[in-house]
Length: 281
Image (cartoon, rainbow, N blue to C red; front, side, top):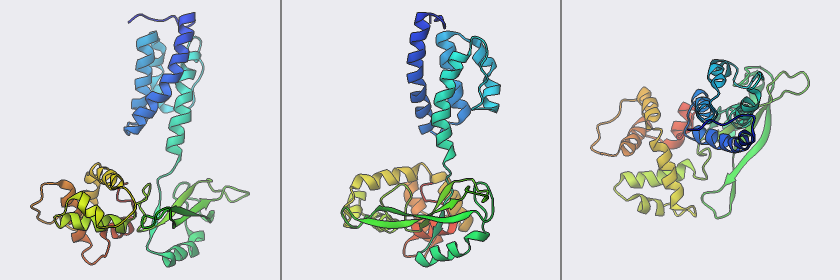
């Protein structure tokens, strides 16, 4: 491939194109859950292939050690700036948001959690005494068209005044709530229970009488399939998997889930309460 003069007119045009390509490339790699070093390596390979700047390869170790501290060097500040800004804007924003969450069974469990909140440490900065009750979390009611329902409440680690917190928030969710989904755990288990009983997925979903589309259930099942390794590992810590004649690993996992929580009306909700993690991660 022909090399491009970095400081010529063609190089300037490439800089504009690269500024557009880089964020798209980063977003694509992050959506596939690739790590930061893989994302950055792809950007460096792209710039080296088109422009032929060996300096970027030499700086790779430094960029990994200090991913958002780019030191301008003669002849490289232009391209490094193009690489740095999309990574700083897109990647840093993605990793800043914490994944921590707490599940409680009902409103009584929520109030019990908040009564003990001042003696707890923040899950992010571990500072004690800075946690405060924050806004309620609302979502779509899966059992009513255009309905709204309270799914939990946020906790704020105060960084105001001398509190010394980090300023982040994390959710306290009811066990029936499924993060990032309008579905409820009860609704999902009703359909799954019928599916285990021999119904097709479509027929099982129709028995729930929910206004939500069938596609939402299919999407949820696909997310579970991508998480089967984690789910089966967690369930195995509680009970060995039962003997199964089913060929579908997802159905085998649901059977295992039912075995771990035999008396629960909704094993999905019981799973989230026991392991304090969403079923879909």
